[in-house]
Length: 418
Image 1 (cartoon, helix red, strand yellow):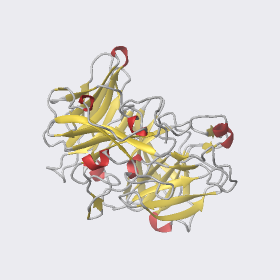
Image 2 (cartoon, helix red, strand yellow; image 1 turned 30 degrees about the horizontal axis):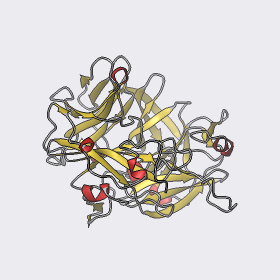
Image 3 (cartoon, helix red, strand yellow; image 1 turned 90 degrees about the vertical axis):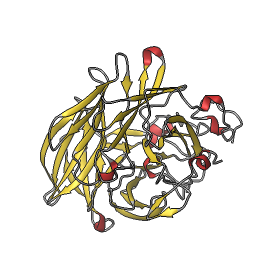
Image 4 (cartoon, rainbow, N blue to C red; image 1 turned 60 degrees about the vertical axis):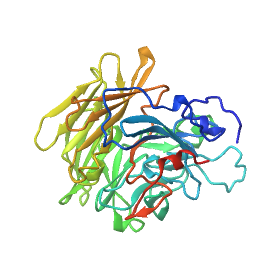
C-alpha cells in the first residue's frame, strides 16, 4: 500500500495510515440545533485512491467509509476502512456496496475474475436479508444474490439475462425482486480505454423492468415489462398491491418521481403518473418494500428545496435552502423514540454553494422541513452524488454483537479499522 496519495483530505487520508484525531476532525460549527435524539452517521463510500482508475467514486473497490458522526448535538468526521474482500464483496454495510469490482490491471491470468457489477442492494423493511443482482460481461446469465445484514452472501441463484446488461438498481417487495435493465451493457472496450463506467448504450434495447418472485429465483427467467424508454435515475420504493406491483422511481425529462403500476402476470405496465417534481427522493426505510404514505424529495430546479409529499392526505411541506445553494439526495434518519410512526425522523442531505466554496450537512424535520432546520458546516466537501445511507447508532451494521438479525457497532472502533 502506498505511503502517500495525491489527495490527503478527510475522505482519503486512510490510504496511508489510520486516522489520528486532530482539531480538523470536529466538532464542527452548527447553525441552529441538532436534535438530541439524532444519533448515528451520515455515511458514504468512496474508492480507495490507490486503485487505478477509481476516480474517487464507487466504481472500484476496496472502498473507504467517509461521513459525519452526529451524537449529543455535535458533529464530527467518521472515517474508516471497510473490511471488504472479493469473497465478501458487500460487507459490512450492503447499502454502501461497491458498484463494480474491476479486473485489476495486474490480473494477467486469463482465468482471473472478470469485472463484476452489483446493483445497489435493497430490502423490504420486515425482511432480515438484502437482495442484489450481479452481472459480468460476456455471460448470458446474471445472479440473484441474497445477502445477510453484515454483507455476507447467503445464496447466489443464476437466472437467464442476455446481452451483458449493466444492472445498477433493484427493488425488493415482500414477494418480488424488481430488476432495472436500463438498456446499457458492459463494454470491455470502454473499460480498456479508461471510461469511468465501462458501459455502452444499446440502441435496439429499450429500458425494461424484470420481475422475479423470491421463491422462483434460479428456476425461472424474469417477466420483462417495457417502460417506454424512460430513464430511471434511482429507485424510491416498491410494494405489492394485490395482483399488481407499485414502483416509485425518479425519472428524467423533467426530473420527477414517477409511479408505475405493473401487472407481472401479464407482463404489462398498466398505469403511470407523476407523483411530484424531484431531483432525488426517499422513503422512511421502516416501510421500505411496503406501501408508503410519505415521500421525501430534494429538488434543484428553480432553487434548492427539501419537500415532504403526503401521498394519502395530499399536500406537501417544503423548505428552501437559499440563493446559490444546491442540495444532494435525501437520506432518512428515523427517530428512535417513535419506531412505528412512518415519517417520524429527519432528512439529512449534503448542500453545497459553488460560488462560495461552502459545504454543509443540512438536517430537516422530515414531516415539516421548514421547522427548525440545522446546518453542520463542513471543513471539506462531501460528494452529494455518491452512494449514501444513514447508520443509526442503536442498530448500526458491522462487526459487533448480533441481535435479532441486526448488528450493533461501536463507531469509534469502526473509525480505527486498518
